[in-house]
Image (cartoon, rainbow, N blue to C red; front, side, top):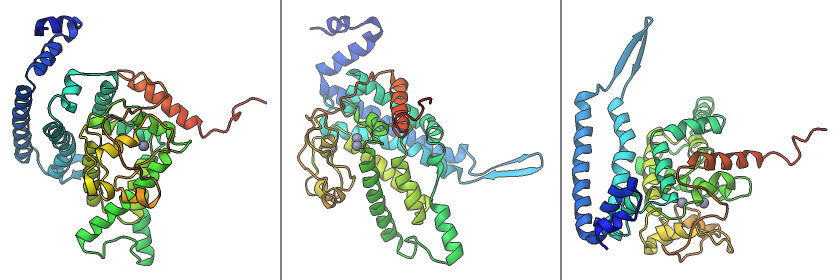
Length: 355
Ligand SMILES: [Zn+2]
Ligand SMILES: [Zn+2]
C-alpha cells in the first residue's frame, strides 16, 4: 500500500500525521537517524538557552512595594532546576530508550504516530503536571496536607534539646546515600498503603495505563498524598536538607521514567537488589490479579525483606485494571471519579442517611 493510500484510510485531520507515520514504517532506520539529529539540535538549543539565561535573567530581583523591600535570590539555580526535568531529563530518557529498543518500538513513535486513548491520557497528564497545574490542584484536593513538611519538627527538636535527629554528622556522600535508602524504605511502605482498600482508588489511575511510554511515570491523580508524604514528613523530621530532597526528586524521577520504558530488561543482579527494572515494574502493573501484587519498591531489597518479590516479568505482560476508564481526553472526569471514590471510601456506610 502506498503512503498516499495508507494516509487515505485515516480521517482528514490526521492525514499529515498518517503520512509521516507511513514514512517511518517505510524506512525506520532513516526515521531513527532523523530523530537522533533532531534530538542533537534540541539539546544544543536547550544548552544555549540555559547558558544564555545567566546574561538575560538577573540572579536576584528586588522590588520596593509601598516602602517595603521584597527580594528573591538564587534565580539562576531555581530556573535551571525547573527546566532540568521537563526539558532535559525526559527528552534524554525518551532518546535513550529509543536507542535501546529501536525506533519502531519506541515510546516516541507510539506517542507521535500510534496514539491510543491510554497514551493520549499519558500526554495530557504529563503536560498538566509539568505546567504545575496538577501540583496546585493537589494542594486543594489534599486539604493542604501536600504542603506539610517534617523539617520544622526537626528544627524545633534541635532548638529545644540540641539533639539532631538527622544525618548531618555523617560525611556528605554517606548522608546522601542514607537519605536515599530511607526514601526508598518510606516509598515502599506508602506504595504498599496505595494498594490497600482505602487508598487504591487514589493509585488506580496510575495502574489504568494500558501500555508503557516513558512518561507513563507521570500518570497519577493529584489527590494522592501517600507518595508525597514519604518524602516530606518522615524525611523532614529526619532532617533531610532541601538540596538533598531536590536531588532525590531528580534521581527518583529519572528512575520512574526508566521503569515505565519499553526496555525489555530485568537489569540482572542490579535489578534483583538495587534498582527496580522495567520488566519487574511491568509485572507490578499486571492486569491479572489472581496472584498477590509484587514489586513495590524502587530498591528491590525491600521487596525481598518484606516478602513482595516475585521475579520474572516481560514487556509482553498485559497491564491495566478491570475498572473501566474512558482515557483519551476524558482525563478530568476519570480523575474526578477516582477522587470521589477515594474520599467517600473513608465515610462509613449510611453516614449521611437521614433519621
Ligand atoms: Zn502500584
Ligand atoms: Zn508504574
